[in-house]
Length: 146
Image (cartoon, rainbow, N blue to C red):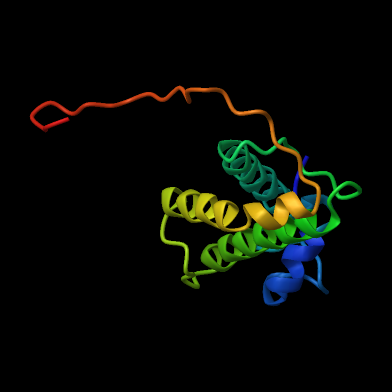
């Protein structure tokens, strides 16, 4: 399930759309398509939504957030995802955006989820019960102190 929509992204990056929509190229009809194409935007929405679910799960939220159950939280999450995908569309067209790298984007997204956790709870987003000890993997680099 994706948060956001191709139409929502188009509303934020309309200049690269065709009449307000993303279009895949169709050689048989000599349709050039948009940059990015509809297929690319939908793939980005899926990928960024998966990253959002990872951040939500790191804060013990059950995913996906369902619009009917938590409309305000769903709307906020969808808008955030739309904005990140619109930034990717800008970058695909040579316009730099605030997101410097995928790692930074995920890090910022997880901070955003943490900052909005109380609002999500108030809107009915459910959490799993947390275990006594969170399992983490530690990476130790040779030559550094632990």
